[in-house]
Image (cartoon, rainbow, N blue to C red):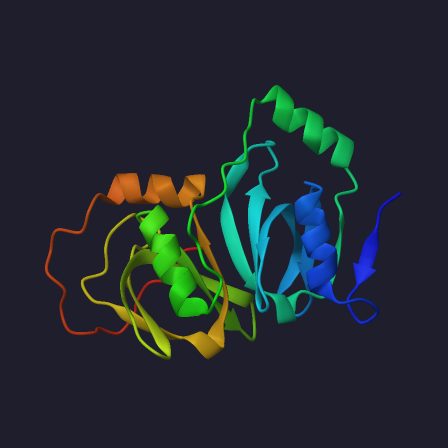
Length: 205
């Protein structure tokens, strides 16, 4: 029987910690931000953040996502738990948790993610779409913002950087097959950074 938890009735941290300890595949919802569910395994839970190892539709581990615990509205054991567990075993998938990733604040999270992957996804809260994703190389972190040199959807580096306020960040992702492929096609940025320019290309989705 699926264990659905509505967090008005029970604190999220205890339930998600239990799912982590028991290695239960779960799905997590953030109403008002993402109309769908995030599917995967809980890797870590802090006082304010949640680290999820995402599982793709093809039943492979596909990167990690950090979300704010306060944004999580529902969580449940994956209704297809038996299938997920068997499929991951058949695909010989082994979950390798990121080492040393601290979930203190968005700056610490971004630094940790950037030390584990060449590019990260900074997903900004958006009134129309829920989140808008920006993928790129972390260039700097200060007390209130992240600085990112982005890659556009055609794997071209922007010549400048963008700044992203912590208050507007919905989640940070890293290590997905798409992000890794985008970086391999783009290669390392070779051109020097230019002064900040006005964006003319949609964010990477």
